[in-house]
Image (cartoon, one colour):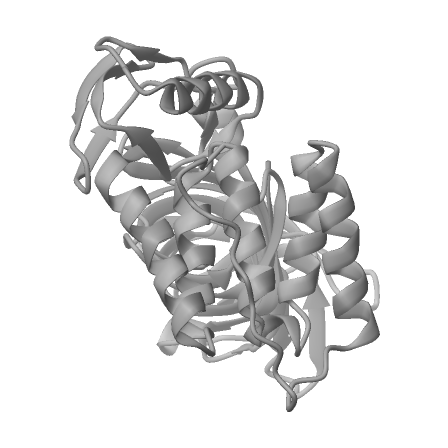
Length: 396
């Protein structure tokens, strides 16, 4: 292909000495090109241009441009040709590389194919609705049509096409030479959007409660397991929370209660155009068991009445809590990979409305038991809180 473009002759550079690895990659690529094994040739040339010498070598970049064109990847070919031009060392190299770039500009346009959610994958059904008179361009289109029908692309994806009219996954688009056209399309031939962007998150860190109702509560560890999925422009999530407490009791001792568990839900959105950094503010609500809520009680025999009178005993009971929360998540995750790990931080601010049960049983360290009743109107607690978490995530 590319019959109108003469083979590029590169002048020797007495200063530049290629590394053995770099030259080996290029020689291996030439071997693959002769046999028409363009996938293998591209792999070798990508390795070559990643080396210190290859990054500055116009020959390697030009070969990569030709190979990507043979694979019907105009966007990648144009990038490689541009790098060959930037690193060219003589007028002949510059002229012929410009001819290649002019060929792309005069014969092809770009379609930016997008989906309902960033970083989703799809097969592309590309149908030509006009006529390509150039036999070389017809061969190019046939190659592209077969490749994108078999190899899913990650959206958004730049697709270089010969100038003409097309339908892509049923959506019509006119491609002008040198033009750029956006095209949102439905997904086809892959798992659903939700499954592609379903994300499992595990976060752990410290939780802090504030205010007069939390004066006895110290910073404590906390953890959260959550699952997120996009629904339209929103990202919805559900979580399972571990809410232990570390308490400094009135006697001066310390107690750790690990029985607090809760569930929550949130809705948020991801800021656009930040990949591979993900920025996600959310609001939500959770309900949970909160151990070690302090209440002052009077004692009569085995009965403890709490909330009224002079305190004779302090009881630390488990209550039910619920309340709104605001979350800000910031993490790195390269979603252009099919499945990927991510890591970052999460900050959650919340307001918990907690309530002690009306009646319960309390037991002291010396095994004395009390039947506890809490006066109506004194059972409620309000606790502002914040959680600072480190997070690992996995996107399916």
